[in-house]
Image 1 (tube, rainbow, N blue to C red):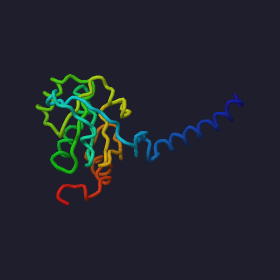
Image 2 (cartoon, rainbow, N blue to C red):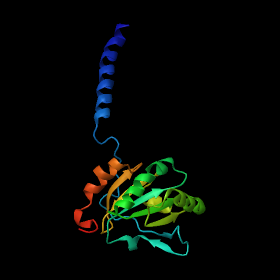
Image 3 (cartoon, rainbow, N blue to C red):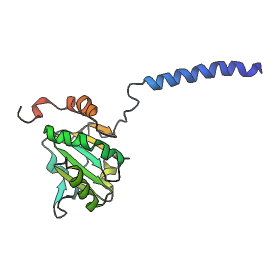
Image 4 (tube, rainbow, N blue to C red):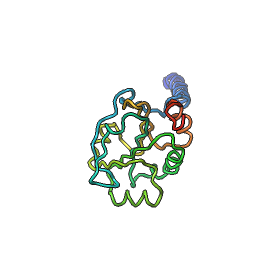
Amino acid sequence: MNRFLLPMAVFVPLVAILAIGIYHAPEKDIIASPLLGKPAPDFSLPDLADAARTVHAADLRGRWYLFNVWGTWCGGCRAEHETLLEIRRANVLPLVGLDWKDDDAQARAWLTQLGNPYAVVAVDHAGRTAIDYGVYGAPETFLINPQGLVVYKVVGEVTHDVWTREILPRVPRAAFPGT
């Protein structure tokens, strides 16, 4: 009986210290992207609004934008949708959508019903572009600068708090329309 007391006396406080450390870790919810500071992956994909047109990553360079990976099958995407509409109304950054592994007709109906926050939506049926971006679950959003570099990545929903505290401070005021 006594031979178990000493290991338990060491083990229990150690577990408690580790649990407290993990709970209070400031960056425990941040998953760093290997793309940060690197060029956003290139792509050429069909446009959801007009499959005869193609959305090219190269055409997006020269301005700040948010690249939002979403799908109609994604509950978090529905939850963040109202915030994305607010971002569009604020007219600070254009939103570029990547409709990931989705049905085109359902995606168009979804945007018609809920409102379309996107300047353009690229369709990624095969999921190859999402893989290039390191996406492993929707929604994920990337802040891209005019040089085409990934500045920030949001894993999960873009909330009003994420928008005002994490994304907006990374965008220079000179990039805002009318400044």
